[in-house]
Image (cartoon, rainbow, N blue to C red):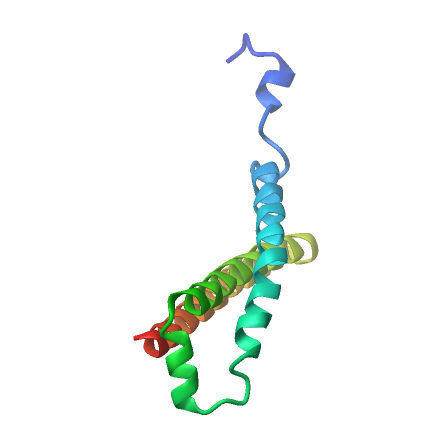
Length: 123
């Protein structure tokens, strides 16, 4: 280890040791949401105000169900990453860890609940 220069020791080790990866995950998810949200609005808008049988019939087709599922998963993952960045910036100590665990648990719980509801509609 003593033969490494200071620069070699620091490469890839930002303040949180994963800043670049986190940044790219946020960029990719925001680009995906830029496509998915308008698709979701157009597909979901067709059944707003419809009766239950119409909604079940509509979401039993693959395209609307896949768009809704992808929007849910990508949106909640983007929320999780954004909330984590906000918490890391403004909270300190043990409260930081508690808030991050809470935000991650909330996002995964919402993903699971939403996908369960979507599967129940689609099947």
